[in-house]
Amino acid sequence: QVQLKETGPDLVQLTQTLSITCTVSGFSLTTYNVHWVRQPPGKGLEWMGAMWNGGGTDYNSAFKSRLSISRDTSKSQVFLKMNSLQTDDTAKYFCARGLVYWGQGVMVTVSS
Amino acid sequence: IQLTQSPSLLSASVGDRVTLSCKGSQNINNYLAWYQQKLGEAPKLLIYKTNSLQTGIPSRFSGSGSGTDYTLTISSLHSEDLATYYCYQYNNGNTFGAGTKLELK
Image 1: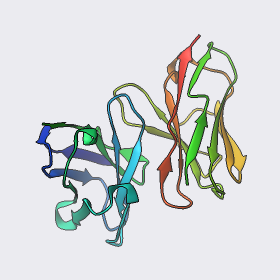
Image 2: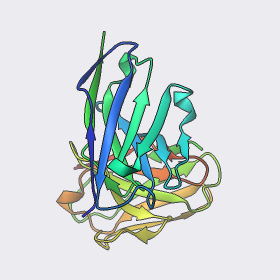
Image 3: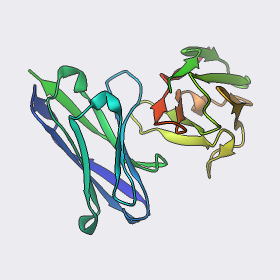
Image 4: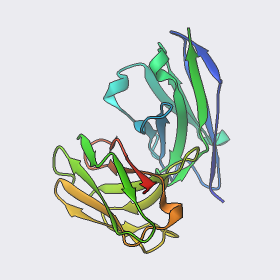
């Protein structure tokens, strides 16, 4: 069955870089798109970006140039990297196939 | 495209007909989806392309709308429907609304 699982650090220091891996199973990354969405504690959902099945990417302009999404199709993994973290980047980060199938999310706290 | 959901909080009773609104800052061309999120869980897709019911979602959920104005209706509220609901547009970029929290009256 379709599964997605995010793995990453619980805690990241202010101004450092966040790296999260989304490992998928039950489908091919060359067939389906994978999106990244985040949710600060007690707040709403924010679309961050996507890795399209063809290998292209799209980003929310709110993240300007500090967000990068890549993949390794041989390992069925999609990667999120975001630099210059601030305290308001504290959030649960989700990956989702086509925004239909979602991972459980990983909670990341940015600490000073 | 910005999405405005109203109300932000809705109190209703089991059995009520409930209507949630989502308005776009420009034409969404029906590329509008609705998600349900319960506390501590990932969002669940309910409706896509304005009015298409996702597989496995109860028929008491329905969507409608066009242009900039869209609606999610729950025909008869069940206790398990208490959650926060988000609209999402994918016509021009990708945007979520701020959500409507549905609570028990």
